[in-house]
Amino acid sequence: MIVEIEKDVLDSILKLSRIKLIFSGDEDKVQSGCIEEVCGILIGKKKKGKILIDEVKKVENVANSRFLFEISPYDLYNAYDYAQKMNKDVIGIFHSHPHGSANPSSLDAKGIKETGLVWMIVGKDDVKAFLYDDKLNKIIELKIKVK
Ligand SMILES: [Zn+2]
Image (cartoon, rainbow, N blue to C red; front, side, top):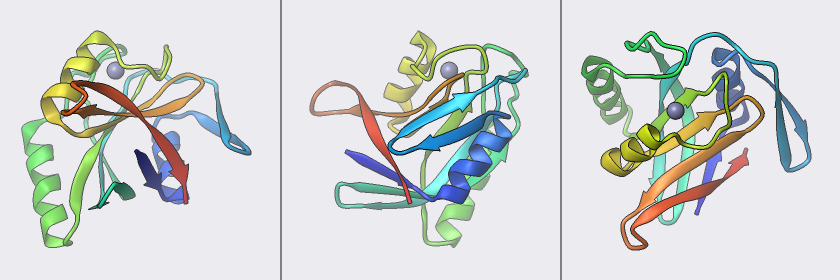
């Protein structure tokens, strides 16, 4: 499955994560790191077999940690409320791994499964998106297409 993301949205995610992305064809490379994990909520539209992200809302990392993130229920509620008003969907969440790869930690894996949302992870040198597939009963990596 493919997740499409608008370029300016991806740019702001990377800016929030304080990581600079260099586009080189299909390969996206990321340079330099940052201090704390940052997180946000991805908003867009789900169509048949396709996911489009056209907005991101940065939210506070209430865990306030370099190795953990936690989104408050209040922020999540507001995002759902906002998406509904805009006739959009809450697609997922993003968070950064300023000190590691874009692969999900074991805690992330649990969250991906439990939330059923798209999880975008901004690692030190890559950006990846994951979703739990009910039918396959496992976490799958989504191909990210920049629009
Ligand atoms: Zn993580």
